[in-house]
Image (cartoon, rainbow, N blue to C red; front, side):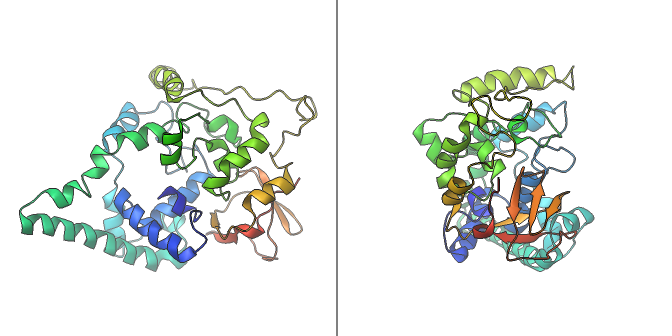
Length: 329
């Protein structure tokens, strides 16, 4: 579901949207509302007040951390039910642009209908198997995705815009890397969310000398996370601070490489994303404007908005086609 949130797996937007709905439903999420929530996560990563995917401000509630391992708290049906009834509350209005409300309402109704049909099938055939293979799988199958997902941000700094301080990379074996769709390169994913999952390894080669060293494996991550969240119960301001590459007073790496926006590999980075038809949602944020360029502190880069000349950030969002998103030095 995550990759289809970003519309990166397939060149065909139609195929992306079809797979997006199926995988979101299997995940227990309504795809329209959840996609905009994920866009908000990328815009305000680990700002607990505005990041819907944050597990909460420090001190983290232990239940918020541990219960998802058995699937509890992952499926949130009440907003979906409200949307299916045509009720759009203030939070949903702020999160989802009005142009997508109708789509969200009908998607929510279809989501509920599918689960009603599965429950009806279980009752009709006097068998629990339809539920075992669908709804229940979200609980007994939650451990592996959760153990991967919780490595991304938990225990790190909050309310800062440097993705290197609020996101971590971890080395995985080929099997887990395949299942995780290369999301072990998570800092790179947050820096450039329009880069397709299959190009993250290439992007890592370009910028790895400007990032904190990746954790050696999942075990090393949890050896740090678990003591941290327990310590935060008494010291709420305690957090993990990654070691960043050393820079001189001008912001340059001592090796001579820039370390400001991770955007100095412009031509090579463009080659990584060239030809992609991805559409990435961008939320309203504070930004600086330079003619047809914007500098976004939330995404730590400068972006070319051509040919959308004159477009202004509104209270909702607009879409930039990925082939026009260029990282500028």
